Length: 64
Image (tube, rainbow, N blue to C red; front, side):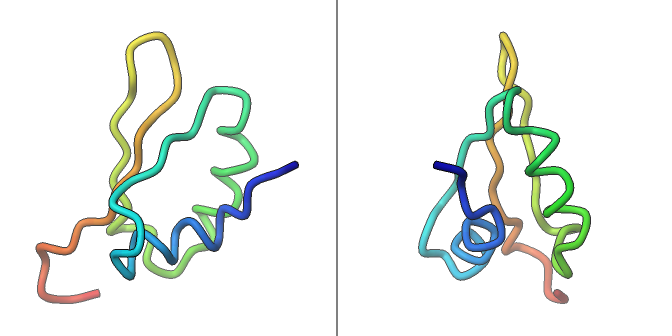
């Protein structure tokens, strides 16, 4: 079952999710969706040791 990355991005934007994790096997599929996401500049990823990343939405800026 593949993840709905668009929905996950909307969930962190709305605050429904605080963050989500993407593993190395998913990254290329996720990256394609992220690059098309209109609010991508506010999505922040932090690399994890051993691979993968954790993403959250930056709600601190005034403009979206």
